[in-house]
Image (cartoon, rainbow, N blue to C red; front, side, top):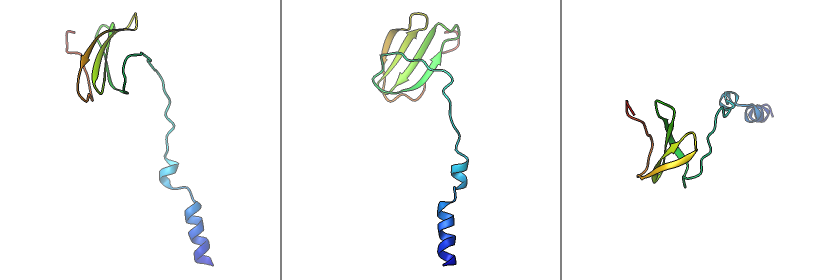
Length: 87
């Protein structure tokens, strides 16, 4: 009986992994219509006027003030995007 009780206690005890769970908060969000898949990367131009987003199948260049898509670039599976210095 003692072994069975010890086994039950171990099964019902919260594990260390569960105790370390962190609650994530969304601090900022941008919702722009246009991508058909989840956005995997986002870059902001040095003058803060353009946003470049990349998803599987396309990269899109956005005007920040109007929130409109300026251009769509066909791409493969995108994992990152960036503006070059002097953009």
